[in-house]
Amino acid sequence: MLTGSRVLIVDDEANARRVLEVLLRNLGCAVVCAEDAPSALAILREHTVDLLITDLNMPGMSGLELLTTLRAEGHAFPVIVVTAYGTIESAVEAMKQGAFDFIIRPLDVEQVELLVRRALDISRIHRENQFLRDEAGKGWDHFIGQSAAMRRVYELIRQAGPSKASLFVYGETGTGKELVARAAHANSGRQGLFVPINCAAIPSDILESELFGYVRGAFTGAHKDRVGKFELADGGTLFLDEITEMPTNIQAKLLRVLQEGQVDRLGSNRSIQIDIRVVAATNRDPLTAVQQGCLREDLYYRLNVLAIKLPPLRERHEDIPLLCAHFIEKYRSSLNYAGMARLPDDISQALMAYAWPGNVRELENMIERAMVLSQGQSLNLKHFPQETLDLPAQSARNTPAPADQDFDLDANVAKLETRLLTQALQISAGNKAKAARLLKVSERTLWYKLKKYGIG
Image 1 (cartoon, rainbow, N blue to C red):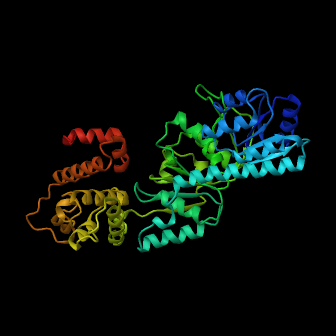
Image 2: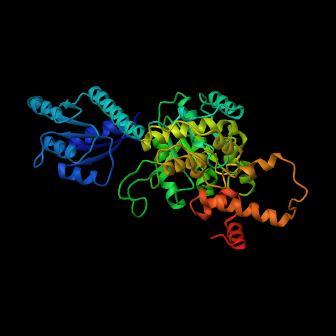
Image 3: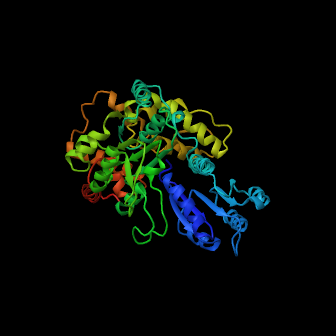
């Protein structure tokens, strides 16, 4: 069955349209019909299709002229032309102009079915290739680190990969949750796409349509059909980043999709069968999120078949030199800095002593910043933020406190809070909501602290 595939039939004869329509609907296709080429072009301005079947000999604009117009407008879906015995030469000419194949009347049902299946396979491959070009280079090879904590993560990914079971990845912001999801997909053997979506980055009124798709007229502004992320991930993996930010009413619909293996486009009364693996991720503690009402308990247990907790960078500081070498090489190429090869030992030691509230993402940004400031010269202390490479403060953790040390608790807490608040704002580029999530406090608490310490 070809459920979910949309085919446009163009023919000036009603009976001919009807025969093809019945045949394709029996195969599970969604069929749209047009009585002439201009009507077909009007439909394509409002609908997406996976295949077009057109008669060659039509009054006004012929099927060959329609094909030429479609290619000129950039439509890449396959086109099958229908012709009679006496006009095979025209069909051959259409193939030279980019038609996928041709059908001769009277129709051979088996031949039509074979060509339609092949054409829809080509359409699917073209769509997937376009998606994969955008996603190229992302996956297992991007993991850097040989610490014991990361080796445990690698082993869990290898064990979980071949399974179809849902995977729950959690850890602090910047620890690489999407990399884990991509690696699990790469290790799964699934032939479909890896489709990521950030639930926190999309407004709730748009998130539902992004996930489920919609049909034309489902709501104001739905001028043409749209495939949702569930359908796009059919046969592959859907990565739901920041799942705890998804509204609970959409979580209920997600649970139904996972349980029944079917998705309904908004505005449609027809269910589409899908085969997907879901990988969910959050920077919160999942059980705490359940207790706070941010994550439905039934959905949590449905997703949490296999769980991977990513260690923060401060718990695998021995990986920092490897990460630095990787990022230096990455930005040396992009910045065309031929002479820069390694990080000085004193800076490397200071970076290993830093707490890294922003984890690997903060480290990468800091290395890129330092390389830009160095203008291709050797890296030194002045290229890094002073609070990061505050060597006396870092080493003080491992030395006994002198007798005259200031033990004023409130004053020291104020200094620490001021430093953390400043770093969180720097990492989040001034975005208060992101800074609050990084510090694991409410935005109200963040605003109170900023006002208390006079931080702009």
